Image (cartoon, rainbow, N blue to C red):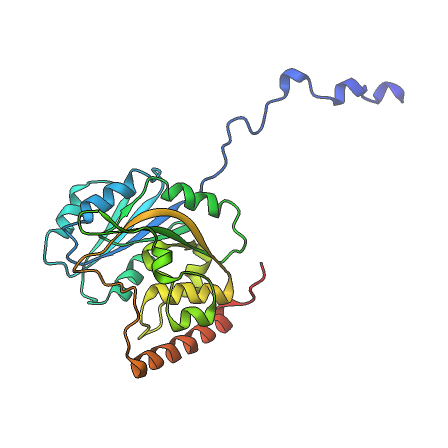
Length: 272
């Protein structure tokens, strides 16, 4: 029966038949969704969008939820005529928390980045984000990135946001005084899926996201400066906590309750 057995050479592919399987494959880049909440931001939003769009890839997106603007904010956004921008207009939340939630609920990317309407992204921001999320330490991962504090005319008035707020991790530390500033944050889609929908009556969305990730995942404060954080008369964020003990206690108690309830019901373990 030897004449029926194939020769060893017949079982081996010819060199000319072999094709490299990975020659045309490139590593997949995670899609970024930049989420922005706007309201009467016409004065600065053009500058901010220009600084964002120049760093994004064609597959990335900017999801903008506008909350009842009465100035030219919406017109400026539409004037970009950029397919990466998804504008959600005609809303009446009258709340930055739920305006941001509206944008986040429509984000399609694997990496979510928050952006205020009046800041400026430095040229390294997206590169820093992609670098950190290339090998995240946990599926629920959130980073806060430092930046310069500037005035209305982009003159530097503070060398570091983190220095101003004594930034750092720690659940109790951030319950007392939140250091998770929204415009500094980027986080994984897995965290977003646990965080949505936002509980009613939470003080701010950034505190909710940062503290939730402290419980269910991993957070990191990145010292590289990636934004110009603009301080002006219409800014909502205060560096110093307001002294209102009863109000603050009530808000913190409700936040802790919501965090524990959400982490138990949907967060699961901190392990991968």
